Length: 382
Image 1 (cartoon, rainbow, N blue to C red):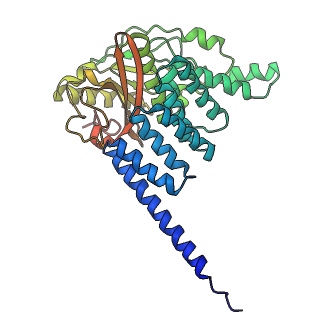
Image 2: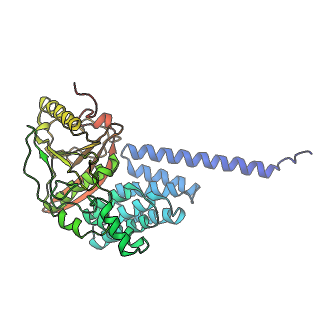
Image 3: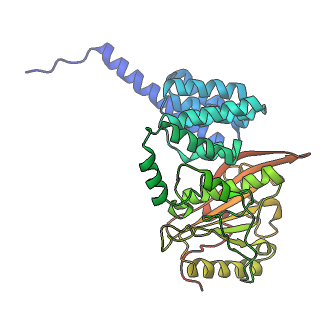
């Protein structure tokens, strides 16, 4: 059989469609480049050109919403976020953008609405650690508790006897019961804090025991988490302290190894590393000490927490372009460096503290090769 040739009209339509797609991709790429360079107004303009050609492109609305957020045009960012969600209800970034826009309005009720947006996304099955991270930034420890309550409510009711058996089999929930102090515990009875000279401090105060005792649901313990989940908890503890007291601990948290007896929950290692950031020699000495502690404790992961304003060395942000460091030298915040045998990552969360009014800003992922505070901590010590 002979194939019927395409009409001239169909050929022209196909060519026009291909040209339109190429133009959309070009405008989007230009917008991405402008955004990385910190030229957010030009980025928004480029995304607008792409949207005119592809009005159903949900990613374009998400990108423009982020550019508007950087320009502090929160109403426009909210509108784009809503459009993104309308076009793609399962696209996680749409909910992240909307919650960010609501929280950026600076009103208590809008922040609560942002929390509701995040909880709704999680409840619909959009599991994403960035949503949880943003929720913790907005509401602190209470957000994790709300997530746990929401998950519990969604579970089918079980008989009292199986519930009792499950509570006996599972360890206490370190994640659901975050401590009041900056020092976390995997077991509410003891937390070992180690100073740089290797001596143990007194156990940290914590109200986690009461929270664990009253908990009816056993969430994963700290030692059960993957490295990224462990690091999320660590930065949450630090941000909780900042909102509560205005301080950030300079600390290395070490994830405990699995306990020998499942009925016990091992403590989280807590090492004071404040002296490390004064000079190169103290940093290297601290690095060797941390390597030894990680190895001797068989820690699966470690998280370094340090406030930018307390760092005398290394000032890893200095001399960096806007493309890789989207903050000014004067901006304060907290670095969190994750170390594990397979993964290394570093994040920066901006902080604001004016006249006792404290807030947590954006969290960005940085290039570990450019911004690492410590060299690799896992592996053989030199």
